[in-house]
Structures are given as structure tokens and as C-alpha cells.
Image (cartoon, helix red, strand yellow):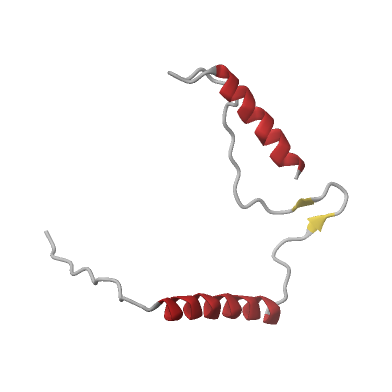
Length: 85
């Protein structure tokens, strides 16, 4: 068994935390602006991208222990509403 030393996080002031966050946001946006190449081209015919970042499939309706089925139907309604946006 190997002993590993875990460093404690450095305590930073609220000002330093805020400025650090803003620094990395600006740095990322400048990088995006300088390297303006397309990561994905949107197909105008069916309004989809050519690459998929993540794909997931699951059963929408399934009987769960101690869960009423109306909650499953509400889940489907919420997913439909989200897809329209």
C-alpha cells in the first residue's frame, strides 16, 4: 500500500474567487474568438448537427416500487415540453 499525500485546498478570498472565475471565462471566450473554426456544421434541411456528443435511450414508462404511475406520465409530458424548446 502506497502512502499518498493529499494537499488541502488553498483558502482564497471572495474577491480572488470572483476574479479567478471571471479570468477563466474571459480567457475561454478569447480562445473561442481567436480560433473561429466550426466544431460542427448544422444541416439546414433537418436542423441537426453532423456529430453527436452524447446519446441516451431509456424506457419512458416502467413500474417502479412505491412510485405512482401518474408521475411517469408527467415525466413524459415534461420531456415533450422540453423537446419543443
